[in-house]
Length: 601
View: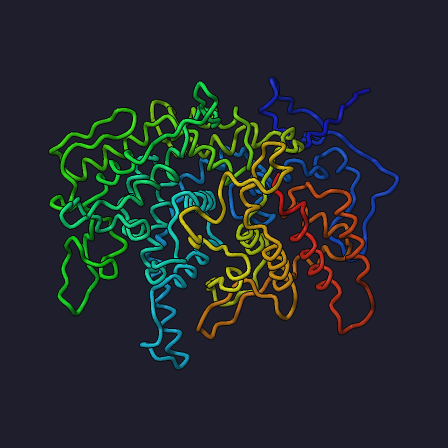
């Protein structure tokens, strides 16, 4: 008589074992096996049947599905169940490699096109074209949402947002009127997401939107008689926030200490002054059409500049002479201003801090707030040298998402593991993981209500320091455990309640609206609950479905029972009340506001 052993692999993928066994029951290898049962349950109004064969053929096991849901929660803004199932069929590395090959439309061009389309709608509704301004930040927001609903470039878009929270510019500033420039800056992040870090750093340094935001656009050389000195703003931030940080780091992200046990600064005020000299002489390459006969030149105001074309060097305005950079690097006198900039970029790229600094920031954005030193060290090693290349972003992204600390089940239960999901990521999750009731194909969203409530939208940071600091420590309990919780900095009592009110708005008919336009008479886009209503026939079935989508199979027994009990209490025979609809509403509201969801483990 044959004996079969049944193995349940709940989380840890097979490639972490020294040997892979593929002939266990539950893996789909049930050919030639007949299973009989005294009862095979079927229920009225349900498509599914509790077949005895499911005990061995793998159809009853959700481990791979839940593991995939968790992976996609780190690597995307959210996907529906069909997409999760499709990714689960192959390796995560295959999915990442396929994502590397997916091209992405220009956000700058889409912002311009969106403005033109919105203007036509505005005029068709009786508006005067002189009363409709743009392209501005509203049209950038429209384009961003249009680009991120129903798209295929999921990983590229996720990494672009992560980079936007490191290399920060913001429309919540004097840049708000420059929609095409905002879109083009986002293109720089998106198009370099899988390129080389050197190219990314150079491109953001030369972008007029960064130049306008951190004031090295029209940054002149010294003129002591007029008390003019190079602006130091960008010079400071390219070191502090974009590459090396304030203090010397070991490869594992820990601080290097001097003989007194103190942290060692990476730069001083003299270094800032030297880098400020480097970033002088940059001005507009082209100007917008204008009635004043203004032509490209150094000193032309940014309002006239083309914001989607890199700045160019005006050498006569560039600080002459040698510049002393970090680690003894001397930029010689007599070379062009652009060569000075490229030398400075190389100086920062090759600094030993850049690998661990950027690796830690990206891990915090995608996976967890408190990666182990070993995790940071492994990613830094990839950044420093992957097949002889420094700064290979493809290799870095793949290493972060496939590292055992991101994938292994053992880390899920570690109390130091995980991160608070930022409010805007929760917003994106909901729009992407559920059906939207949209009949015009326009997924434009100004996001004004959500931004007022939470202070978050893409490129909407209040300062160059992002929405929250990566080193933020929420309270003494975190401090005692030497843990950080960056997103908790914006998790205030007011913002927390505002988020709950937002979720109530999303799920509460007739107010449920996910996407809204501004000054346009367009129908708002609410959630569509029709598919979920099928599962709402049974409270536990509905919660299990929502668990796969939102809580990645990690919904606690206590939370699950609370939600199931609340759903099951909603019943009745009143023909005027759609109880299934209300059950979905309540289940979604409770899931989306639960700690099991908002903490990504």
